[in-house]
Image (cartoon, rainbow, N blue to C red; front, top):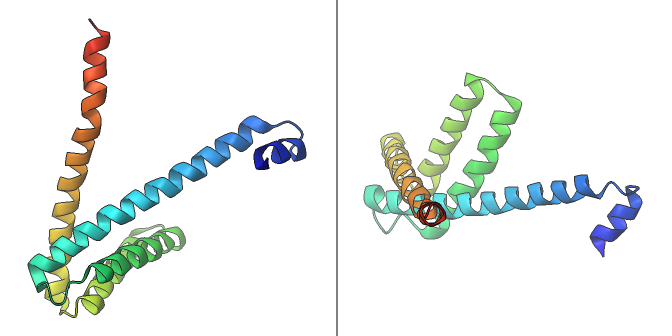
Length: 141
């Protein structure tokens, strides 16, 4: 219903509208996956560095959500090294505030989270690549 009314409104330029909806849907799904992975990563890193009492899963979610949103806003308005430094400082401030730790504790959590993040994405990339490798092998037979 929505798509047909948009097609009529746009004068038949439906390919662009469907492409725009697909890109938006893909961006939302990617954001949700990124948020879930970041929450788990920050929770695990927080439990390892500051302990289970101060590293709550809800705090990890808030750190991930606010850090991602504010970091993207910083990158949007300050597209240079200043935006990167400001974004990193905001991440450290969020970790420091929600995990109730000092600057060194926040730095340790962020470094460990970065390491865990890379490992998780490598594992996910490998797991998602296995079906494609299997199908490519079967197609060559």
